[in-house]
Image (cartoon, rainbow, N blue to C red):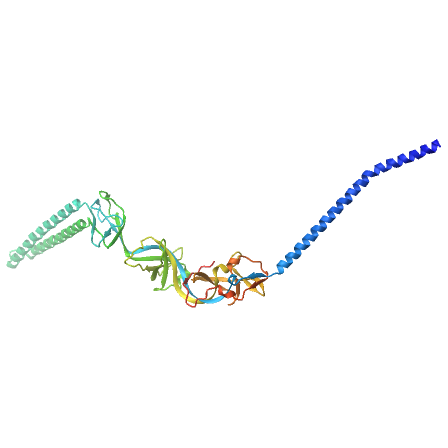
Length: 415
């Protein structure tokens, strides 16, 4: 009995030890099963969420974008006035640089920038002391030469009388005549020298050749100036012009008499200009063609000044073209394009742009590549994905200004 009890005890102990060894494995298995169930439930929930999001996105994608009447425009045919841009600085048609004609000390220069001068008015003078002395010297030499002419004239008259009476030979008369002619030539040379000296004395007085305003004063009284030294510059602001340099392509359409509207830097109102001359030769290097425009300035205002920068458009003609608002042309791709509505979806239409004009406060641009009446999404809508479903209001064509009269001059530049 004791042996049987001992054997049963040993078996129970072995079973207990075996159970103890399996307990960690069973616990680990239970944890793994629980974790796997949690992961599976999380993945299932995530898949369900993604499916719901996809269904919602599909529903939103299928819903068309509603566009108001002012969010779309149409391609319209408009009469635009064509033109080329011009710019440059104004300059006076009549201007003069008063220079020193003789060297010497500058005296009597009192005018300054902005002072008014008249044609022929004395503005300065050069010290005339030396010029007066040279004139006296030349005049005295001329008087001496005149006296010599008188002596030779009397000698010639006496010799001719003696020849007639037969007292001297004809050879002596010829010699006397040659001496008289030499004296006369010397006298003429002396008179010419005196005239040159007199002209030099007159040149010591500097006068303004035109009426106008002093633009620059380039010398000071008491300064010794050389010949051709610049003293003052006088400009006549009653006639101003603009020299515009045009490209060869733009110059082909320019004609004398065409009008331009210029904006002066700092001025609120534009000024009118007229093409008066076209240079027959293009400039070397740049190949630009100078075109000269006379600027019309009211005499009572005279607000324009030489050197002011102006820019504007020169009207060269008109054309019937297809137009859209400038902001409707997209330029975020290599070539410009329009966002049009085709079959209820957004479609990209490549276009070529041309002249621009401002009509009723809206900038229009000529386009080529789309037919008239095409519905275009306005620029303020931004970039839309091609193929996006959209619906537009029926009154979508009223956004673009439809002016039957010719528009202001249009630039040839492209966006």
